[in-house]
Image (cartoon, rainbow, N blue to C red; front, side, top):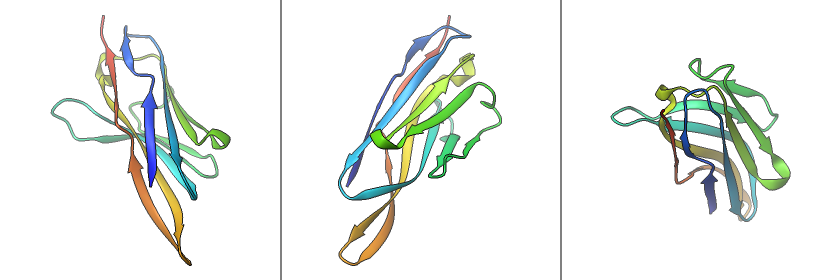
Length: 123
């Protein structure tokens, strides 16, 4: 089992910044990729950013140039820096971890979600 704990959400004015963090804990797992999703009220959950084990990031068009995803492999942590925030960025943000673990002689791939953290952009 891998557990994810998020932090860093809050209320910020338009144009402001926040940094979200997500820490993974568990035993005997290796990280394949990290992702951040968000879900606004009455909307589908959408992919915001992702970063592979090699460190290559990808972003949704709506956040390119404003958000930055990064990872600290030693700390099993992923970050999402949110800059130039807009009211339409208001949502619950979730981290997602794609990981591999060993059971017996076999390896398996699985995923785990964070609990979500609220980001509200409002004046």
